[in-house]
Amino acid sequence: VLGVRIIRDPRDMVISGAHYHGRGAEDWLNAEQDIFSGKSYCEMINSLGSMQEKYRFEMRHTASYVIRQMVHADHNEALHRFIEKNFLTIRYENLIDDQDLVEVGKICDSLKLPRDVVGPAFVRNSLFGEKKKDTQHIRSGKTQQWKTEFDRRTAEEFSSLHQEALEALGYEENSDWVRQL
Image (tube, rainbow, N blue to C red; front, side, top):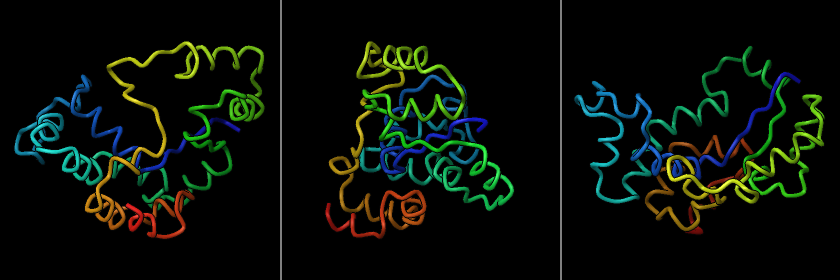
């Protein structure tokens, strides 16, 4: 194994991205973009009135690109086979609260890293360990935020755009989740 690939529920990625992209300091977030008539991504997302509008904007823009990359929707079959063969895939949801170091152990075994060194370092730098939320990048870290954050319209739009990705990544078997909101 050459590396580790971490996937995350795309719905939670949208929420995380919408919050971060409204305050991030990265150059690309604050650069004028022709697609937004000279406004920056940060200005665009902040110009929207509600969080639901921001989530819908995010799912159509930056998160859409990241989601396509997670499911290899660029149709680059050679790259897809390379990743499947050479990378261990770990779910963010399993890693974020890995207090028993099960997922970390898989990573160590795959990359031939010493568990006795990596385990304590992981705990020190985890949200459940000594790492505290920094206000710049980490807002929550919680999983399944979409259940309380998305309204029905936002869920329906997400499903119309990214349902196949949810299924391909194993987060849903169908679109029934939308009706539960």
